[in-house]
Image (cartoon, rainbow, N blue to C red; front, top):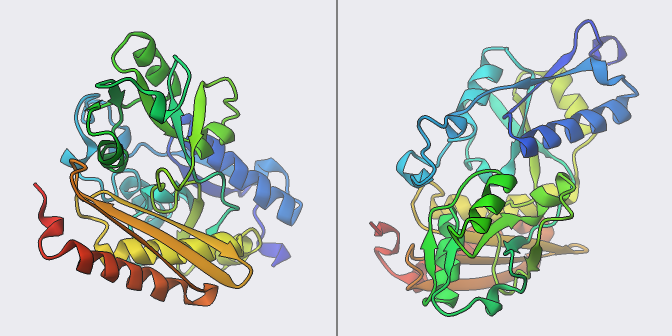
Length: 318
């Protein structure tokens, strides 16, 4: 494959969103590929692509993302660029990814997973359980809102988006007393000074595939397939196969909060999952442990179990 490797004069083009976190993930991907094939960084070109989810004229700060359409919100334009040949591979936050890829594209490379936990952010210090009665919490995540209201129905939840600095300013301005971010993003951007408390999965299960980076390619690109195979993390792939099967069986396009986390212990896999009503008034959770190789079947089985417990019409929330 040596003769097919990218070079400074003919670089492999890496597509990404332009947010600080997305760029950090693209740079990590470039660094891993560069090290795996002993290539200079100039052999890889990072191409920033604006997605619908990045369009501030469309995505008003106080407008819930579900009103625009969560599915493909941060991926559609990037995938179109790959299918047209404008880029060779695309780097994604896996929790943004639909469970099915467009025809002609493959998602089978994952980098080692970061911290999966949510981070509770407040300028006053303390954790989630220390919030005063009736406190205002900001989040744009339907999952986090539902989980929060299930545990603390006394709290008020307001729409809350923006980068880390924007959210911290909103907290300082009193828009809300607390918010959430992903520990993975804070770690990848080395934001050690953000006032945070990691929330244990036992207290709040994360989003499906939270903390994982996925790299997408064209199905017929043999060079990209071989290069990505060299940096693929098998354990992350095994865990995500179970979590994304759980999501797919529930139909991840629905407007129902879903959480899941798979953990490995040798050849065994433990999958925990939760589905909730958007207002937090109903919650169903469970777990299954089985052989890691059976992860997709475990995900499907757990989804069906929770749907049976929830009963008909649970996904018909308005």
